[in-house]
Picture 1 (cartoon, rainbow, N blue to C red):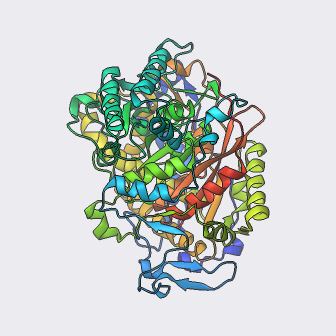
Picture 2 (cartoon, rainbow, N blue to C red; picture 1 turned 180 degrees about the vertical axis):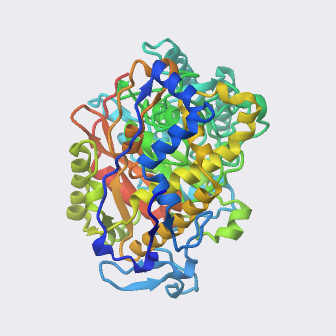
Picture 3 (tube, rainbow, N blue to C red; picture 1 turned 135 degrees about the horizontal axis):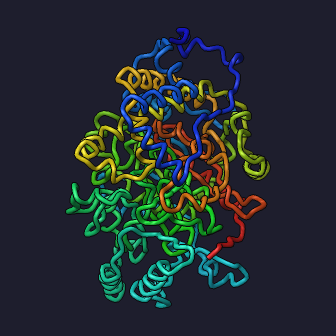
Length: 624
């Protein structure tokens, strides 16, 4: 037994005494025979739990969960301050105001200047139309056709919309190119599978319907004819949802679209199929021996990141303008960062999760796109809190920034950005932190943003709390099927995760939720003084795929630690966060900057992400 530790209440913690502790993960790196052997030992009664106990002690889990007295009550899902208690700073002054005290002439609460409120009960196409009006005026010359000097260029949603409306192309002609490229990926060396489920005729059928709408002069929205991929844990009829497994479709049928997919379909989006993923979302690299591991378009020998590997790669390849992923531990933001695209995780409960394999209190569905404006358009279509969460969460109205307004620049100048220097710089290569620091300097110089030093206590406790929370929720969902004989059909690294999750006790879970309330307090206090918290998205760029990991998978907790270092706070606390590309390292691998906002403040992080994108726009070079 370890010595008991008693935490002081969070509000009594002396921040000046907080010392940053670098993450030190103790676990073997396993592939091939070693991985198979280790899993066999792990699943052996008596021996497996003993080894697990040793590993948990080495990683201080027992100390934090069982030997520590945590004075806070448990918080079993994110609980945000009531809207009237949320605080905003006025420009660069230290004046703090309550939202409930800041009203316009009609008595309505103003969340921030230069935003447009979207009606989550209205039609998705109407929300998209409003979001479109918030974008700067479209210049046809900005399309790839006007940039022949670039080695590669993404077609944005508005580029396709212009091409369709000007007669340059039709959804059906684009569909044939998309189908040809996707079918060609099966012949690539090495294999680079992007999709788990693909039906060319289904794509042609959707494209033909979209083409007819344009011919009749009745496109549904700016998204009509736009091609998207859907991660394999989100329902998209008529495709099955396998969650990257070989068997999930056998126990769960798909009879209709997920709510988020249905909203996009009503706007005319064409779905190309179900994108590859790390099995059941239980990994950060995107490795999947079941269907083949998706390759990073910037370097084929490297991972995309996960678990939304296929969605990020298909966008980064330029095949689709956007895709949907899920994010329970950075699974939208990690691959977006490693693949050089934009990934948004909204506030917990901002998007209805009905019709997905995910659930629980840490996971959300989020868009991935090549640009911030495309993320904003897709997000506008798919948002909408479920009625149950609307009652329990009392969300602020969903907003998007009015980027076409002059006031938007003034708002940028009023933003204070919080940076915890020791955390920010705890990366595998200083090229990552240097590139992110460069962006902060540009924001200060160009827009007048202020960077303020902050302290974030108990980061190690936060990681443990998140692991127990997401692990317990995953196990609750999967365990009936595992007990029904499906466990041996899961990949080896997934089985290691399940063995770990099974070792958590009810007391461990409650302790993790007490830590969640404690950490929520720290971050709400930080947000009284800053508007956005800035970090690198990941602690390393895309890792190399070991040849021995292709057939049977890989378990590398050190790499996982680097990839998840900065992202999990948004999941544990339900905060909105976005990853936006800021350049490349010396090997040509993308680097992402993460912006973490207050609850419900998607508009704030989208605004700043757009500014970062403009400041750091660089030529894109892909491996394929």
